[in-house]
Length: 245
Image (cartoon, rainbow, N blue to C red; front, side, top):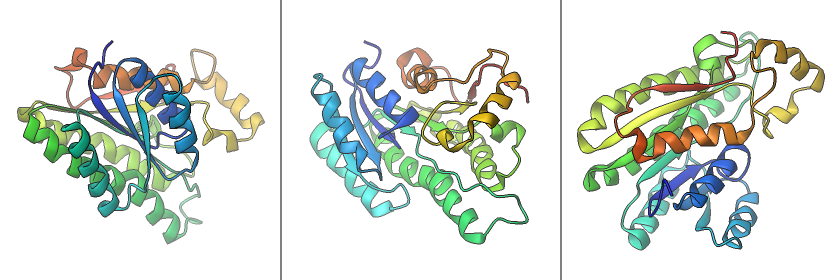
């Protein structure tokens, strides 16, 4: 087991990539705490516990710093440490620049960027105290190449790459690594809203010839969260089937 006895937090873990990651981590021996706003989280965690996997759910928003502090304190009280933080939670509110409303800009930055800052700042202090930690955050390949109609989303995903490099510099001496993953086109509830005709038009952009699955990203998270990646720090791992940039 690659994560035996590790304590992991996964934000946005109730569905999609986060859910696939939570199940994989638990199968690899971790005790997993899912943080999500969705009410689906409790049923999902319970279904994994029925398989003798140690998965627990807390309903919270990554924009709520007090709720994060409380949830972290609860984990420290019961498990004494936090080894892994997967900053996976994210939203989209797509509009072209000239049509985007301030609220749409603010909301995406609040969840996708400030939420990552909130979780990492609080958890990293405990990782520093224990001299060990793995922080992995969700970027996107559009953070590298841009994407029409996603000024707000691309801003956050480009920023995740930069702040991961900063955290690698600041936290590396405490035994903490900070990396990110840039997924490409992945079949999730978020992308279900894309019309099927448009999805088919995207396939020629992917050399592998098909969209990815949540588990493809979960395996990337697993590697960067494991001790196998102890000397991997400050990188952005792109998992997108070779999508044209």
